Length: 231
Image 1 (cartoon, rainbow, N blue to C red):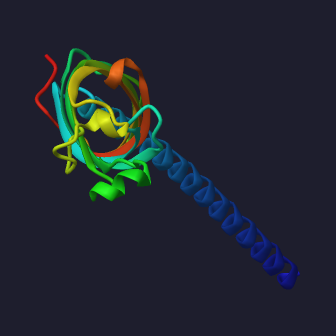
Image 2: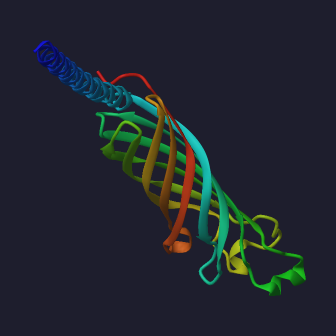
């Protein structure tokens, strides 16, 4: 009889311990779930603050380099050009900005071998563009943003290179002149900090040397620095 009562007590003790452990586990799970939920809420709030801080800057300035394909004469092959670019942007809102842009491009024209008789080999060419227009940001996240820009202005073409005393048009190249130009680009920014980003952008630049349109494709890689606040 004594042994039976002892067994009952043991069983009761085990059940009580199991209930306590179960309750403690449930309480811990509930506490962990609440902590995780609060952590997610804090993370979302932090991301929202970062996005607000990143895209509420009044000014953006930047610069970089790139590559472009250019046809230096109506009947000439396209040649490779190394480019540089610098720009400034005044933001009217987190999405819309006014852009001023300056670029340079350098390469060597692919002319006929006939002119090698005059010691003319792949004459150097240069273009300098002064453009202005607008940019519109259509995607804005904590780390990534995307915007399109459309610019118009002039391109200064210097095609004389090392061909003196000949003129560039005498060997099938465009004449050295200043002509209307326009540019369209897709700017893809990776934000390292709210005020600093790396930019990669495929670009299209239209120039009009010789009274025709040259469709020049390329890309640029650069940095963006943001400052000031939109009030």
